[in-house]
Image (cartoon, rainbow over all chains, first blue to last red; front, side, top):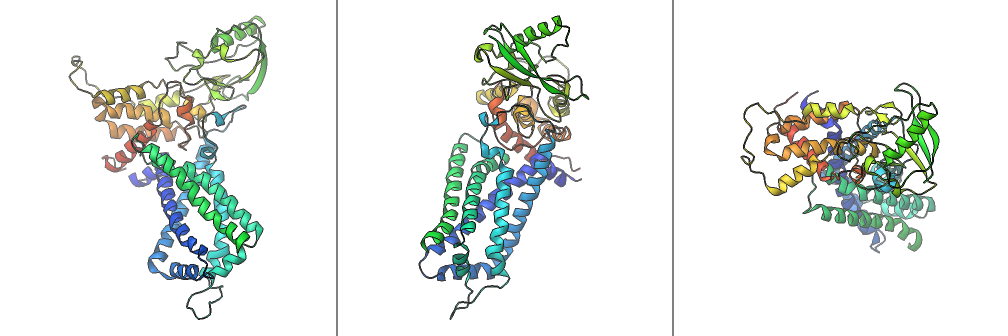
Length: 224
Length: 251
């Protein structure tokens, strides 16, 4: 192994990959939510359809899509490798243990929360990305874009989907509450000048982003 | 005080262990936890049974020899306390107390409550030192060190290497221990000479020993009897990354 692979296959190196990909995925959430908020325009889905048409056809977005997939792949791959290593580090567990007295639940269950998010992600891609990308959408009369909005309306009349989406967003919120500030710690960015701000900002970021996402299925289920 | 103890008994490294229940009677609240175990061991010896093996040395909280996972917490439920400094007045008459060894693949159980912590020694040997040539004793104030740096280095240096961080961590990670050693020496002029090889070699040895990765749960710092802070782990991450990016070791 050369120095590069040695660095990024060490435990610290893998955590650095986890934090960089994690923060990158946070930036994706901001872009995704910003676009999705067009769903609240009361224009029969025109703004949302134009937005989704842009996302499906713009060259820069298509390139970033590949980077995004790589971000997910590295984040998940390193999570699996680290989890297996961490489990192997304690082959015999405790008879009586009280981790709740020294650490938060979310910090101890990032793998479980991540798995819930992954299951949601696959269902979500199947719901919207696959039909949008692989041309199963209907056209919009007198417009050169397709109607993804009608898919959204249809999907969010299904109470099972709505429940899954809301549960997944709760899981995402807890994942981010620990993950956001933890990423800075893994990168060595811990200082009394800015760490309190990062922790508060991370908490607010996690809650607001997930509230924003969860509001969409609830809005369509109850009000559209 | 009368108590019921549930203690991990294991004959040797190879044998399978189990929790065994022992009643103890007439414990003074002024006894330390280890003195309470001494009382139980004397009873066991009188009955011709094998006494419970546990690590201890100075019994004044400075050597790092005592361990014990008591009621689900390393060194028991009190903050900033080693087991030898934990007093029985923190328990109630009639309590049931569970006592287990540290659990980690890198800390195999030697006997009963005694674990082999030589993995920590090997990590230290990989870089937790400064190389000093022999010669005259240098003048005490020849190398000026700022007060804030001196304080931080001293705080990191208080690590007694007991292994409570590993025992508390859900991943059995040794990051708090390694970070205390690395950051202490990286901050001081005498340690700066070898700071890159130190960070690289100590982390490499930590991984070889089979400790887990850091999930930043903070359980280690919460349970550390001498209060080593999580800032040290951030310093270690920085030290490691910059050493990997700038050291002369290409392989």
